[in-house]
Image 1 (cartoon, rainbow, N blue to C red):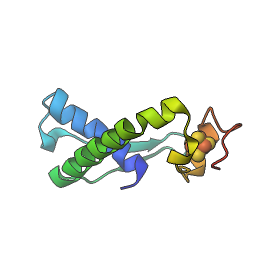
Image 2: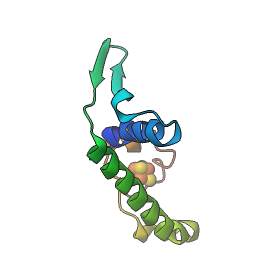
Image 3: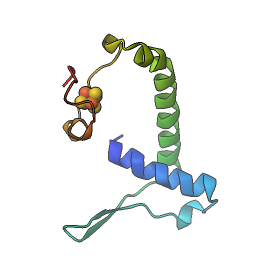
Image 4: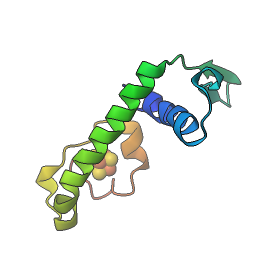
Length: 98
Ligand code: SF4
């Protein structure tokens, strides 16, 4: 699942679960403001279930890694491998994983 899709599906999950908006009334769109383009993301209940599962899995992984992060055990972590994310990372100047 692409990270952008996961982020947008998370908004859909929020609308469904926290605001009780019926699935049929939820639209997920990505706006490219500079290009004046609006792109719709087709999704279903299955996509939302997958997004929910991915969020829970990621949360479990983060919980398992928490002690390593607090103790500074850098070997426990792999590089994110996404240049766009590394470019915005506050640790990029000292990161040895890039
Ligand atoms: S710069 Fe390093 S710490 Fe930051 S996201 Fe990239 S790999 Fe992770």
